[in-house]
Every structure is written in structure tokens, then in C-alpha cells.
Image (cartoon, rainbow, N blue to C red):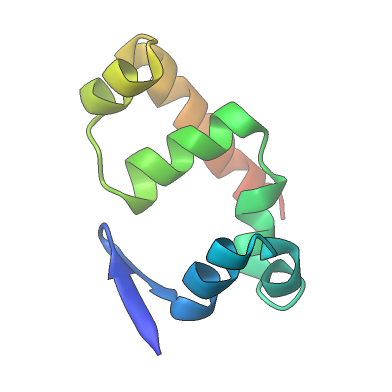
Length: 85
């Protein structure tokens, strides 16, 4: 079964496992989650907020207390991690 969060559907195993605190078990079987978890912390926050949750650069910048330009650059860097995989 899938759940909708932000603009994207995710497998509800992610949600159940996140509540249990054992994301590594799901990541072992889901390459998408493994790729997200492999990002450095700040890049992961930016990716989740801007791409998965659909927040604007300004909203992300406000939440993370950085400039919108830094959000844009960090998101691009995070996406480059996925392209390299």
C-alpha cells in the first residue's frame, strides 16, 4: 500500500519503519530510500523539503535559515548524487 506525502507517493513501509526507528531495514530493499539516506544531512533535508514535500526555495530557506540560492545549489548537488548512482 502506498501513502501520499507532499507530491510523491511512498511505500507505507517507510512510514511504519520510520516510526520504529529502523529505516536501514527498508533501505536494504529499496534503492530509492538508500540513495536518500546516503545524502549528507543538509542535502537530505533540502532534497526532502524541496523535492518530496514540494516546498519553495524561499520556504526551505526560511526553515533552514539559509539563502534561497544556497537551497538551489544544495538541491542540485543532491540530485547529482542520484545521477552518479
